[in-house]
Image 1 (tube, rainbow, N blue to C red):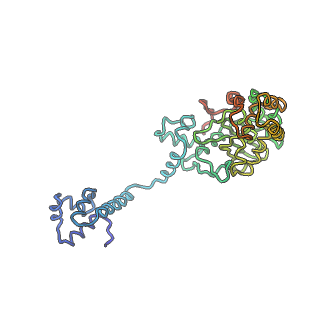
Image 2: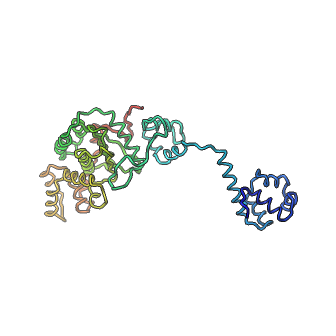
Image 3: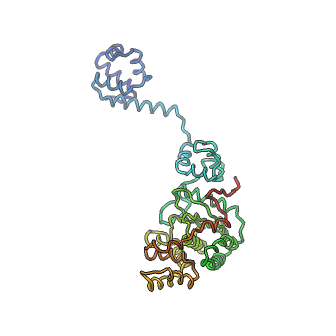
Length: 378
């Protein structure tokens, strides 16, 4: 069969085979002759109903006429629609980035997701670029807790917000000893929940930029460590688990990254960290494993905890918990969190997992929960 490019060419050959004229076909189909002429000239489209009538007359499957019509329409459309190199970029940005949430958080100044003009200009300001094409949200900029799992566009948007805020902070000069100094001072705060309000000041005095930024839906970020330069470490936290045990674990985890100078070449993004469970149950990077170990040891000395469990298990009492808390100078909530992980029983002592957000955020550089940190617009 000849290689037809339009259904009209096929109809024309079918007419020749039968020795029919265009007028004859019009009479058989009960159509105007001008309509048939348009089909043959490729100026009239073959509908589904017409294809079925042609199938009945010529014994050629209706699909053949419709396939030729579709291919012809597509070819014409390709000629009339000019390629737009920005369309793919817009599809990626609008499709992958959490634009609606970024608008709600005040990161983008736009009325709604349909306010495309202001969204594009807002994205350029947010990512500090001169063109929408220069925005990079592909998952290559961060190393996550789990091995070989890339960061999502939502996570990278959150990271960029933290970086923008941290870039405007003024802190003391960071030195090689700063992280150890900070850890030593912070360890003195563990007994009282209220003492956590001093965390931002201690970190700033040691040259660490500390930012609390509410996470975006589905991002599931706990914390992050990265460096603006080799002397400017940044720790970002979300407090998405508003508990004293999670706060201190994640903070010490990120400080271990700082102490070991992790995150200089690639961002250390900790998503779904939730205690040190991942160190045993999932494949994680070596940097994350050592940070988990350091965080657990910081929260509760592990040898003492092991001895306590061996002596008291399985009947831990409130009196036992409080006594161990006093002897180690560690808040009962930190011990409860570690016991939950070590024993697998998460039902006991939950009353000690006190909320931490309202204690820490008043003295911290914070973005979220209804407040928008005033980042200078580029």
